[in-house]
Amino acid sequence: MMGDVATDPSSTPSSSSSSSKSDEKPPRRARRTRMTGAERRRQLLDIGRGLFAEKGFEATSVEEIASKAGVSKPVVYEHFGGKEGLYAVVVDREMQRLLDMVTSSLTAGHPRELCEQAAFALLDYIEEYTDGFRILVRDSPVAQSTGTFASLISDIATQVEDILGLEFKARGFDPKLAPLYAQALVGSVALTGQWWVNTRKPKKAEVAAHLVNLAWHGLGNLEAKPRLIGHRKS
Image (cartoon, rainbow, N blue to C red; front, side):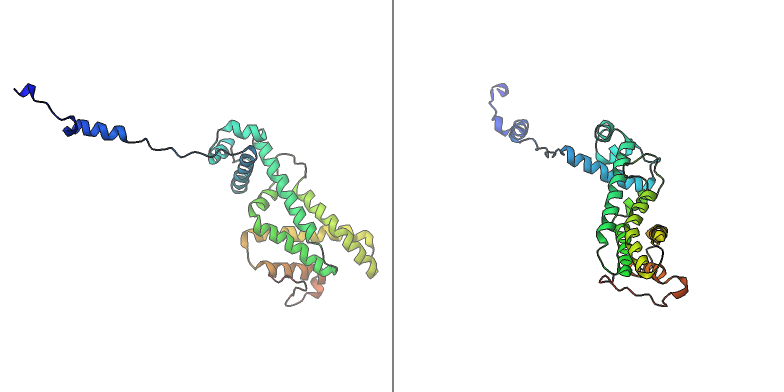
């Protein structure tokens, strides 16, 4: 009788299918590497820096920062207390970086080459840390320990002031006027930098040469083709 016929379980499609499925191992999930607190903080700083440079402080939200970092909003608050705290750290870090680049560049003995080095330092910063510069030249809605961009320029001018004072005294000029000239020189470089960050023309070395040309010779004695005397030519 048909009902008495024994069937081979291994020959039935359903048994074969269930057997093969039971032998299959579930796919292994890729293990996510969890960031350390320091790594997460650096990530949030980098993301915030890019957004603040692109959109400004007011237009940037904690939600957007968290979304780009792949975290929840409380993580941002945990590290920085909010958007204001993150912005303040970003600005302080950029100000210190620019100040360090300028002050460490002033190594030459000749005053004209010192002017070149200061101009190159600011233009180097603009070229390498464009986002940071864009943030610094905006008005800041929160207080930073390092101050504002104007106060930073004043700090750099103070470094130049001592050099100018010695040069003025050697040439018979009143050294008391050195602070005025230092502010004028550094301010002109900073404002030119704000213009150059968008145009990027002429090339950096040419911009530096023209800045020093004006600072060194004055309008009455400009060189037709300004040259650089230091070792940097680009």
